[in-house]
Length: 207
Image 1 (spheres, rainbow, N blue to C red):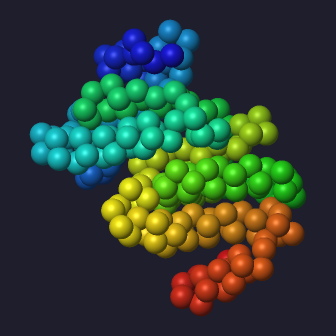
Image 2 (image 1 turned 30 degrees about the horizontal axis):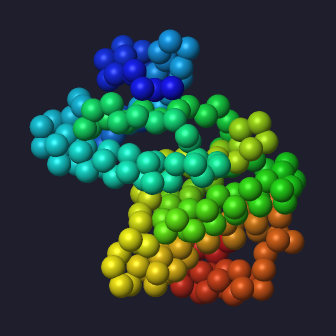
């Protein structure tokens, strides 16, 4: 879908600036082109050092994550690295979970999210930034996880990869437990209750 899309197309089709990136952060905007609507993460207008040291690394890392995780249902499926320092990702018109109140959704929606998390971990990846107010969307009843900028592949680390994955997946699982607690507490398992107690013991703000 995005095979012919260029950076010039994206820049000329920009309609809404979502974030003016601070140091080390991309500018993020919505753009339109030939009936497509997409999100662009862009370091092209940054200074030379920021563009070439932060921008190339951050954009390259996220693009690799999208390629490696292609095919997982519930992740954006359309994306293109427009330049070494910019990335276009399909726009999903939905509501983030920060705007969804208790009682508005049931266990089935939470189980969709759990399946996405499990699929990520099965491929040896962790998301590490599963914030319900930003990166978890509900689109026509379907759950999507977006923004892979923080995603990491500990499963690829030689020798200790499996152990590292298990350790780092703890943070994704905490996000899952939080959603269960809010929207479907009956789904919380005995093991997850222990993890929740551990989280509340070591972190100052309790859920």
